[in-house]
Amino acid sequence: MTGNTGEAVSVPHVAFAGVGALLLLALGHTISNLVRTLPAITTDVLAESFSVTPGDVAAMTGVFHLAFAVGQIPVGVALDRFGIKRVFMSLISTVVIGSLLAAVAQNSVGFVLSQAVLGLGCSGMLLCPLTYAAKNLSNVNFALWSALVLAVGNSGMLLSASPMALVIEALGWRSAFIVSAALAATVALTAWLGVRSQREDRHPAGSVSSEFRQVARIGSSRELRGVVILAFVSFAVVIGVRGMWAGPWLMEVKQMSRVEAGNIMLILTLMLISMPMLVSLVDRRTGRTGMLLVSGHLIAGMALLTLPFGRGLAPLYDLSLLVVFGVAISVQPLLFVLGRQSVGSSDAGKALAAVNLAFFAGAATIQALSAPVVGLTGFSGVIMFLGLLAIAGAMAFLLTARRPQQH
Image (tube, rainbow, N blue to C red; front, top):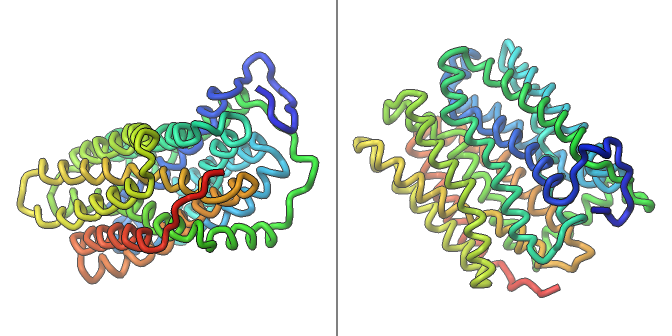
């Protein structure tokens, strides 16, 4: 399949086009989800290794999301100027380096540095396949394409559940990052062989500052304001639960083993992988995107608010509520769909960048805020804090969102 700007095929006998290339690029998002959710299964051993508190670990790993957010606009400019494959190869190579830095970190400063490098490397792992889909595949089923990318990407959280728990128990937390580096290197090689190079646009993209101003203008526009507000808290809640606090809650409060906690998070992850596709089909049938977003976040928030009340109950209680949370929060990919529908086709890419930027700026901010929250209220308090954020985001969206225009 050829793009609008033509293609130069470097390895013609193995290169894939269309959905095949999209899936290869989505594997980068898989690695991104793996490394960003490792803290959920390693918080206790990281805190012990670096002589810090779990709240400090949350602040340290929050640097990942901050670097991720900072990288959004430059990555968007680079995708226009240099093409998807070149950008992807640069970013996935950076992920290999960041994973190795984490594996050899001897103190909290070294680990924070590794998180910054990993955040920058992962900053385009979602934008690359979404941009490929926007440029090379049919726009009619964009909701399905984006759900497919996110489903493949969310499978990275499968690896950071029971499999990585077993690796850590057997070989230590550093081995988890070595495995991550090896997997990222494998994805890099596969993408180098299997994704066709695309020439950069003939017309140079604007400067980073001008691109940032355009994305900021679109993101703060009346059409997109509600979407951006909900995106700011939505991913932060998911990453706060699956990427940080579910593990400590299950291991420290419910006294589960690391593998038992990993098994529960494995089931939660299966919901996060499988449900977005079903949600996209429901959205296509009903056309009630806004209603699905509001109801999903309200239900997810209520599940988190209820979770701490089962402190003395059997693990089935926690599993049931986390499954409800995972099913309900799977409406999240519809934010990309609504963002794309809210503007004209010429601004679709910038609208997607605005939504993605809100995702990770929110994750960085709220992860940092969760450190003092857990210090003051414990694991129960931080989980309820995330539940309240989901509900507040849904209500803010309901009050500020506009019905998307049809473009």
